[in-house]
Image (cartoon, rainbow, N blue to C red):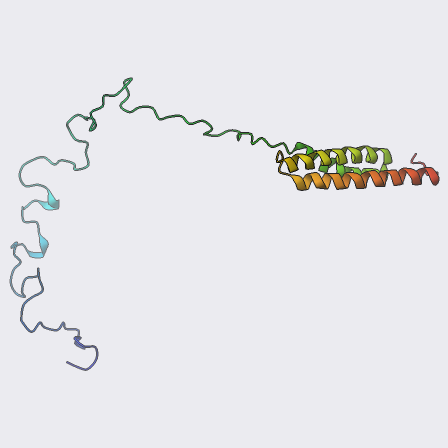
Length: 185
């Protein structure tokens, strides 16, 4: 053997076992296999692994021929082989169940408060009205959020603050309109 990897012949030949025994399950060189058939030919004479005993082929995955018997010994009820599954409340598709929170006042307070700012600049009396509504709804929504009946304290606070800003801008616009005698006609 040449130097290199131990047990490897540089000419591609496998090293010989010093005892002269072939590996387990393989016949020695020059001797026929134990079945007597070369190249793994079927020993029964039937190609494709068909049974040679004369019995018809049975599908191993087919349903058993005997009728089904309940392994637990219970008799089916109402003609059904299995009982009906229980129906649990609140399952399936549809509207989610109400959570008991009312976020409407905080949301409307924020909408009216934001709308009151530009309206207070162009139409003072509309801005004042929406500002008052936004401040009141924002205050009520903030109280509901503090009691745990709503989850939008930030929206209610924004409605309260922008509502007050809208009222102040509306009043300032109305005073300036009266003193400067500006008409919007």
